Image (cartoon, rainbow over all chains, first blue to last red; front, top):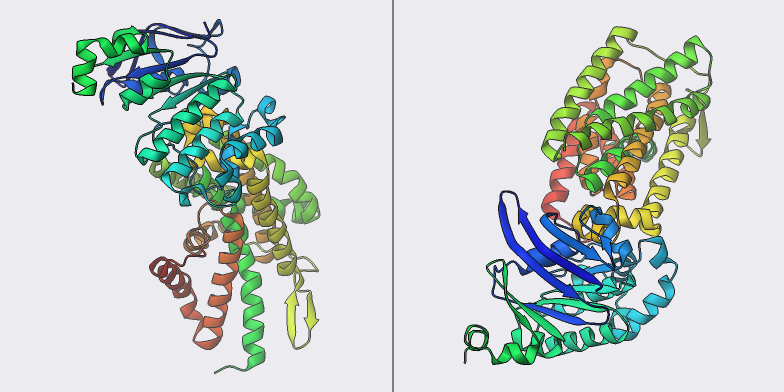
Length: 235
Length: 283
């Protein structure tokens, strides 16, 4: 397994937001976590990215124990985050945002090659590379956020609600890009409220409700469960 | 209305005097803009450096540039030590204002204990030298100060724009968590920047020793105007700080020539308020 979480407890301050979560992502896999607002999806993904400390449990990446690794060392292990709401450096140019993705020496050595790859995926960013990231449209900002993650040459990309706030046509593009990321060799952990889309691209999926994993399996099997159909698809 | 020559001379003197505002604003703007720490002790560190330059010059006959070469690295280390305290006690923006205010008061008292409250003047043969350009006089020391401030501001600006460390500092100022997610060790960079800020205070201090008359209370003399300069120049923008310094210096000097010297202190804050209200795009 590439990413292994075992009985993970994560919280903010005095409150625990996710309990006893176990989750795996294998190399080259797309794994989706679906669940309603406030279920703890962002908490889960931020813990995987090193932004939140785990209270209890184990987090392993490629066999290495990640629980004692400092936040700024996660990226060097090959974990890159596309955060909720994009969180670009809005006062910096598009290209500077991308360059931050290859801040670490190993990724920096491939700066030019990675930039070409990102501009190949998102040609519009090449034209706007000198513009401030904050001046771009929502869809273009999401492209920068994904590009920034790819610049790190990650082995897994963590996507947190990539379709949030985007027009429907652009949402389709984003899911195409997620497939491309996997084709290029990285694993994907995707957290989404857009359940149909998230299950459509996934190899496996987990259902997170009120901070706990309540169900897991192949997307096709999950779609057959009455609870999932009722709660997420309204049928 | 004063003559064109007088106005021209006022403009030149003002811009050159503004170089000092800019030089003092540089370190303050960096730590405020990029670390969210408002360092009032910046002024006290500059005066400590000025007194040390004075002491080395008058007692040991050390040339000011050699004095600066000795004082700047020491101040760099003091800046790092100061940041260690901020880091250890997790100081936020407002608390930093109060804590560094007390640092400044302590330094003021220490300076007064050692050098007394008497006015001190470091006389050098070049302190009165000037170049004549047409009808105008350009004082050599102020010109040197502006050149040094220009090189530092330009160099720091380029460093923040072009190097990975500079970009990482700007990114971390916007969103420290996400910068960390891409490998930026913000704490380490913050130490470097704090050291640089204190080193810039030392460079400003060397020029203060040469240009101004020293007294412990003078620590506070530039506080208001330099704060205005930092805000007008935009936090964290070194070139902005220098240009704003020169703008305020020139405005003050022309106001003194056209109206009365007493008007000078009003000018910097009038310009600040005008710019805050106007909020031009290019800033």
